[in-house]
Length: 203
Image (cartoon, rainbow, N blue to C red; front, top):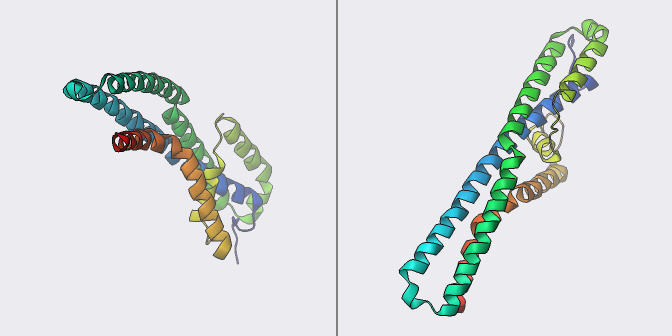
């Protein structure tokens, strides 16, 4: 006979389990966004250097119009790179990731303490743990996103009894949200390459 709270039947324990899991995922996602931002802006800066070297090396082979187009394009992309770098830096992904990690650890500690209680102790101390859980949420001004909960749901599908078409739909939705989350960085890396290929093909 179960003598401890179970996340399958105890609403408070289930909430803490889902929240801590989602916030650990948010920590991973935000760190990934930070490094994706660093890599994408660095590659874009490398493209600009390569463009300048190309203009210097093949100056005689370029027409005046082509040289002007490349110069204008380089200036526009440079301004865009400065704006993107400032915006991404202001978002402070690593700082928010650390807040998510600390929040997840605090909720995890509450979860473990509550789960270790007997059913009688859990019912007697439920209000206290609920208040501590609320305080842990309020202490972190940054909340996790739906994509973090989707990832948690996918990884915990067996415990949540999710399978079949519902599981497939969940994976598809998560993949779409992931693409939206990182599409800017993919565009920063791929768009200049595609533009360069098209430009050479049209020459």
